Image (cartoon, rainbow, N blue to C red; front, side, top):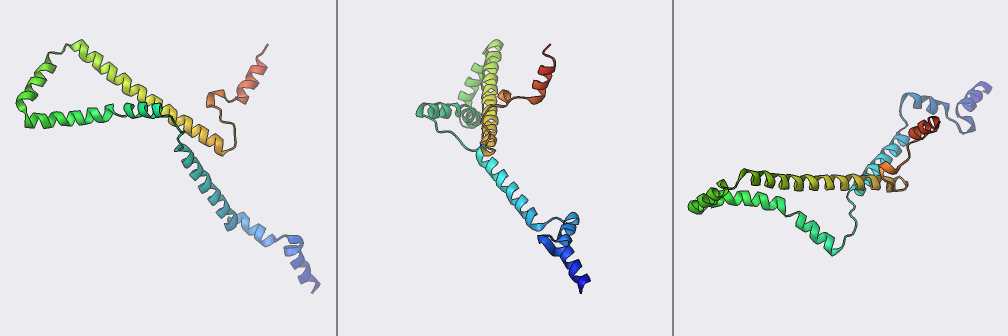
Length: 166
């Protein structure tokens, strides 16, 4: 009887469960795994939500943003309209194309540069806004100050500067 109670006390005494602790070495604790999975889901949903938070903008900013969204649909619909016009009014379409044919080549280059720079700049601005919103959302979620990546300190760089300050 003393042997069995000694073994039982060894295995389950003092609030410990040696069998469960040993089993956790070979198999994940289901409860802890569920907590980690729930935390990961919660973190990813919080990051996803932070990416789509838009600051409140004034009337002027919304108006300009709306105007900036017009050129792409206008170009697409204008190109489709050229096909429609070619089928419905071939004589007027021919006159329009003859007019385009006499446009000098440097003017076409200028038009291409303007359109390229407009869309390139617009793409860059939108990409930077997206990156900034993701960085701010992650910083807010993690409870860190919302500083841009370039303003954060780099410990390795500080150590190098301290070593080479001579």
